[in-house]
Amino acid sequence: MSSTESTEQIYASHLIDDFERLRGKAIRSFMYLKDTLNDAPHAVNNGAPHVAVEKIEFAIGELNKQLAIFRAKRPTGKDEW
Image (cartoon, rainbow, N blue to C red; front, side, top):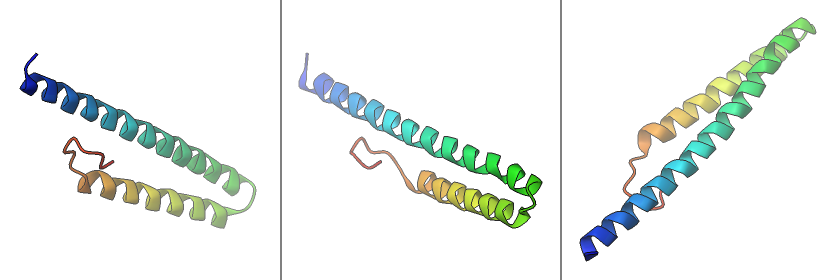
């Protein structure tokens, strides 16, 4: 195996690892936001629409933060995520 092939394999391995970490983080974030949004209708049904609005506004804010992170990041193979 040449030095170039070895370097490429290491680079590919790091990219896969970075992708898996980012994927796991995104899944955890989406699950948390899904649970938060699921609480909003319950708040409305229990006579607390202001709580529903707070939950929805929080979820939208978190989604906007995550979108900003995804848009700003450019993977280079280094540990940036």
